Amino acid sequence: MACRLHADLIRAHGLHVNVGGDLGVGKTALVRAWLRGLDVTGPIRSPTFAVLEPYVVSHAAPTAGRHGLEPHKDSSLDFYHFDFYRFADPREFGIGFRDQFRPGSICAIEWAEKAGDRLPRADLTIALEFDGEGRRARFDASSPAGRACLESALREFDANAVA
Ligand SMILES: Nc1ncnc2c1ncn2[C@@H]1O[C@H](COP(=O)(O)OP(=O)(O)OP(=O)(O)O)[C@@H](O)[C@H]1O
Ligand SMILES: [Mg+2]
Image (tube, rainbow, N blue to C red):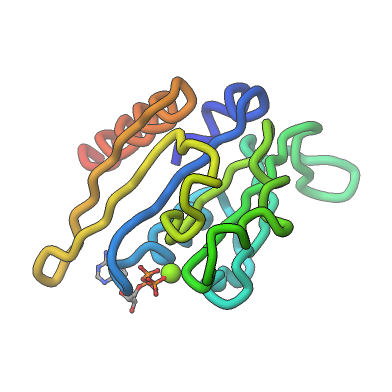
């Protein structure tokens, strides 16, 4: 999704995406697909038990360097995949999980509602629903970074649909 094109906005403001929906609807699968789209090749685990799984993603294609393919300088962004399902109290959010919400990082959150109003406002909200054998997704952007991300994701989707 969009972060390849909007690293400047993410560096300045960060990007916070809530991925909502019922148990088992596909929230982790969606974030996993996003990370694969950002060329993360290692294991991508559900953060249900760990609460947080961190990644480093590159927003620029690597180029040939002295040690083979190397990322461009300053091309990496921190990507944090959270799942707050196991929080018994929203106050748990304050314990070690606030610092990741900062300029330069992307935060994708499952079960954001478990952190109550302690969680910063999302730039983009994705609401997943069961729809027969498939799934339906509703996207709501509420900041310039969220809108830019959503617009370029839709452009990519249209381009792939035509191809
Ligand atoms: N778009 C989809 N179409 C069909 N099946 C899907 C889709 N997305 C996910 N699934 C399947 O649904 C199951 C649950 O997916 P996933 O673990 O991503 O859900 P989740 O919303 O993260 O669950 P939880 O609420 O427990 O965190 C998996 O078996 C997955 O393969
Ligand atoms: Mg999940």
